[in-house]
Length: 181
Image 1 (cartoon, rainbow, N blue to C red):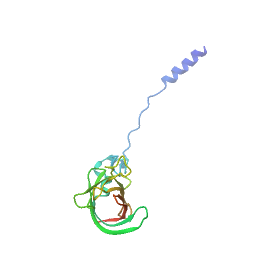
Image 2: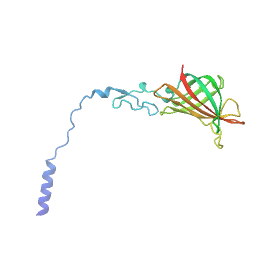
Image 3: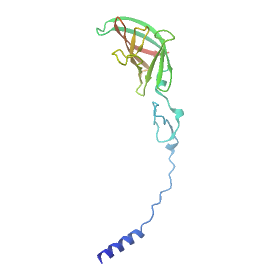
Image 4: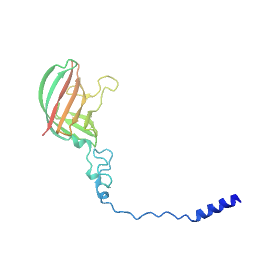
């Protein structure tokens, strides 16, 4: 008798259930806001929720492209003695969404290849020296290897440069701030 009552109550409860009905959708004005939906972009998902529109994206290379004026201060390593300063005008070109080329440090035909990221930093790609301690790229002479980075400041529109050059005779540090022309 006890099982009959339980089964009866279960059947009554089951028959009294009603299927859930979704509420009518509400129009939200924020969903028409365009936002960048490319994970490589600096502004990925800024303005979400909204409509994906990759025409509003800007990429790490966009932070660096342009022509710059730079006073290159050269120091010895590890003593940190000042050697000399020279004025350099160089150009940064986009090679892809994350790759840039820096032209003008060693003449117009030399291109320093770098990888830029969303953190406003571009690092020199390692093209030589994977198995040695001198990793980086050839600098102005075949005997020189350069490594380092460009850091683009979000607040003062300056680009900070820090390159270490290892040559057959000495190691030097090239430091300074570049201003966009």
